[in-house]
Length: 289
Image 1: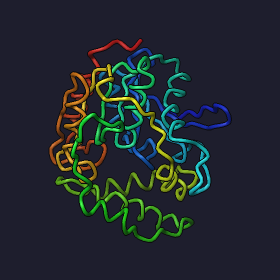
Image 2: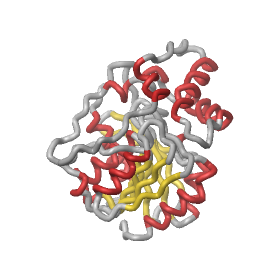
Image 3: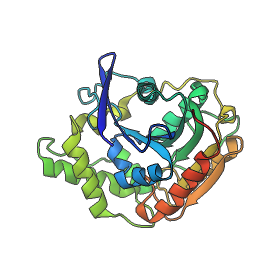
Image 4: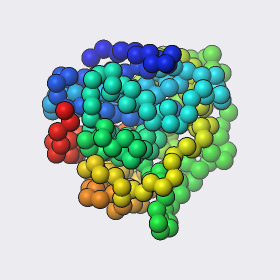
């Protein structure tokens, strides 16, 4: 496993592959403002040991991928949607098992709808429908502690002060914890990794959230044809469990696996056995090559 950077149309995209290239590929798509390190190395290694090539990557404005000035992204939401396909092209992978979390789950839904031929199976984690339904879903809003981060955000750090930025990055995650609690040492370790390998943390924490929504109209979840697994924390404060249930109800044949006590996050270590087994079982159902 070695980080690689490809440059397409002047845009650098950084990715890392684990496992054997001849094995079926699992593509991990992180959430908004998340670089690939949030899909932890050990998590990726365990999936690879189950006979998968596992690929994680940095979104634009995260990690070592291309950046833009803070508040002025030079790309669109559609670019974020097609970047993982560019990485698969670079690896010579025609179809992959696509796993997306939060914003990455929205990207995964778009790929499954707009580029169905590239998706062997779909796994949606800690996310919500990105296309409308014919009925009112009546989905609950974020919990108050999460809403407060939108309505009354705390002050930004001095972006030149590494320790302050690491502390800020940790605190950004705190409101999203579930009933399993907030694993501060883990988040501090990941935040330090992210700060040390990101080109511009101010841009990383801003730019994904100022993009216009360019999701095409006319799609519905029941048009997704890829076999779909939904992983959702039972105490997700951003997208309460009803969001995962809606995905499972509207995507034909989808299966919901609740993650007990998980919040809005990559599956916590306590639930790796459950989550990894579910992904391995799910990805055995189709041939990607």
